[in-house]
Length: 130
Image: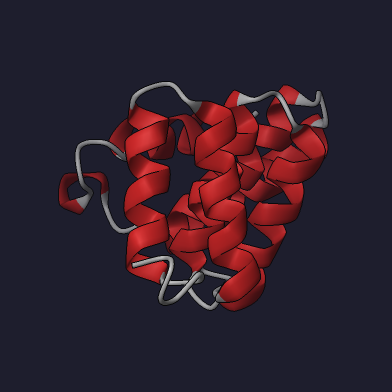
């Protein structure tokens, strides 16, 4: 498919996710980068790139991808969680608290959240109180 359409979003997403699950992080990042370079219109595309960058310890790439995701949808919960977490890891406690506040403000109640998101949102609720 990529020979016909080198920026085929579905194929690049599948390749990136498969590589990510197998631990081939450079390959995953390359697929996600190629995807956003050719398309980049969906926050999830940028989130995938941010997660690959995070696993590769590339904070600059992670931050850039998160910012692009948030530029497409400033209320995208996973993007907000990733941003807050990055700021916390960087030791930027005041900025992290503000970012976690944004997570808390857009998140639905915990009982309505997907189970994968509950720990992160719970952490946001506690962190913003600090």
